[in-house]
Image 1 (cartoon, rainbow, N blue to C red):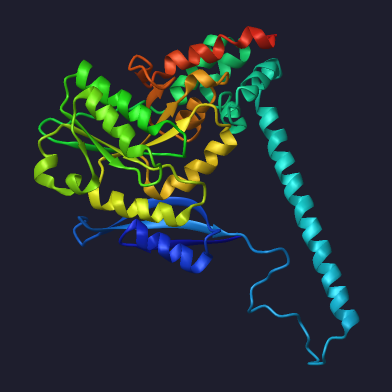
Image 2 (image 1 turned 180 degrees about the vertical axis):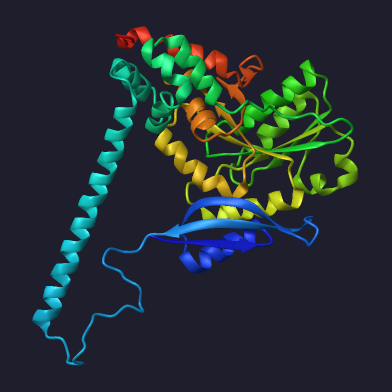
Length: 374
């Protein structure tokens, strides 16, 4: 795989450079803001950096490397066939080596886990916790006593200590917080936005406004208009939001965006342009709880150029596994904002409560006949 960093003054320009050089199949590995410092250490300019990778087709090699041929003679058909066969063997050895390396990693991970906790680790894996995260539960000096006398409550507290602290929408004193919601199609962004708006308006008496930026779903405008009428709050479009004199009158502005298909780079660039214009203070990535971790990991990579600040989890009523919140908060160190289940009721929303979710995860231990201790 070829890996390269692309820097530009905007997300769109950086993504454009990635697409021009690596094509639409480029894999986004990381994104960050790079600050250029002046002589006195002050920030002079901020630039966006995207790390992207591109898979090489099997058998490809850099164009500047040629087959050694000191004599200058033309290679025969038989020589070329032999060289091709050698290349095939090398690629097979590479696959075998990669398999052995991955197997070794798995063995090392198992060796770090006390034998008395193997059944518990199997339980966590069945609940879709990342294997590396499970291993980290048993790492560090602070786990020495736990390895002598393993108990579920200690492991549960350890998992909570490893998790990033939740961060719901902030309220600024005398200022406006623009909050954009992004995520896959069908993730429940609009319903979540309406629930949060209802909570802010009715429970906390916060001056809240809605903005529709969903250009993909045909019923998006009607849906947002219905929420606007029910909550008795204005509904704007993105042009209204760009008028700073209007935005300053409200404490929280909630922006709904369209769901994007995985690897839809052009649509991601368009959304990045819109977000760059309105400059949201927070970007919440909305992920449905029923997704498997390997799928969620792909969505995290895809949306990373938009630099989400928090992650909200929806449809908690449609999963029997509660590993996802901890993969995000403990393994990826992402801040969770809200948990939601169902679609319609305001009561089906809470600020992310990892303690309560950990209880729901660990209360299922008895179903798997988990035994800890010698």
